[in-house]
Amino acid sequence: MTTPARFRFSARRRRALLALAATGCGPWLAGVVEAAEPATGGWPARPLRLLCPLGAGTSADGVARLVARGLGDALGQSVIVENRPGAATNIASELAARAPADGYTLLFGTSSLAILPATAGARAIDAEQAFVPVSILTTQPLLIAAHPTFKGSTFADIVRMAKEQPETIAFSTSGIGGVGHLAAAWAMTRANIKLVHIPYTATRALTDVLSGQVPLAFSFPGTVLPLIRAGQLKGIAVTGLKRLDAAPEIPTLDEAGLPGFDVSNWLGILAPAGTPADIVDRLHRELVQVMATPDVQSRLRAIGFEIVAGTPAEFQQTLRQETARWKSVVAAAELRFNRVRARRGGTICPRSWQPVEH
Image 1 (cartoon, rainbow, N blue to C red):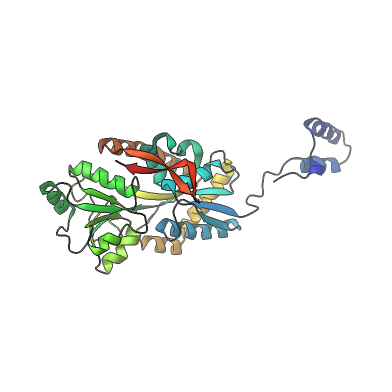
Image 2: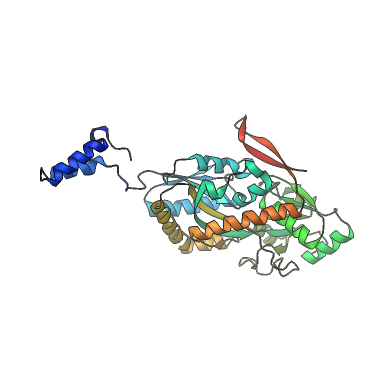
């Protein structure tokens, strides 16, 4: 809060007023001195904005809006979700990193924050330096799904078929350098097979799989499960260590022959570096309460999310570990990415980029 001009005093005048107050020159002087100091409380005094790196209608956007509503109720101020997709989520991250560290701008971060250093190098935001983690809210594994006409029904079938005819089985993901792409790359490295990657945008990743032109997809349960239940796709495996509560019949890759394989996309809240600790603590406490509400839990678990609501320290550790893990995966899979500048609003965005695999 900005101190009104009439209450602004130099350090010398404040010391003089305090000395006068100490000599008993009037209790009103103490009130003047108190008013002269900038207010440190009162947060939040206006609405907050939550930058979401993915577009409206995506599963991440749905979670962001659900959490924003609960957090706004808890804080007594609106939390406005602002979608800033593009540049492999880097646009929203850059905007959040440059925002004032006053608790009024937050980032709805995804696993991309840990992936970008592996795919973008120096162009990526250094999340550990740019942000203070507040809480990982949810995690969600990927689900490998297939068109009903695909001959294989298990991951072992895929491995066998891929070894018999390398680079003939295609799979779709929501884009180059995303968590689906890198999860598939890691699975191929572990299984010593080669599949053909067909990248799409997030909203079109299943189009050709549903038509049968692409046999496999690495996608998220919230998108795939309704199609599996409708008989339009069949579930092959889950990339997390646990089977989905919403689809316990689908085995994990850990069970299917890749011991310890564990890839989940996490969603969490971060604040710009330098945000006061008391604001971070308040945000964390309120988010824990929001994620504990029965409505939030039932809605998220129904589409394959696991509730986490972890501590800032746990979030920091996850960022560090996953950043190292994805660098290792990209190196082992021998993936190479070009960096090209992304367009935003019809103009080149010089600090952003789009990965192009080659």
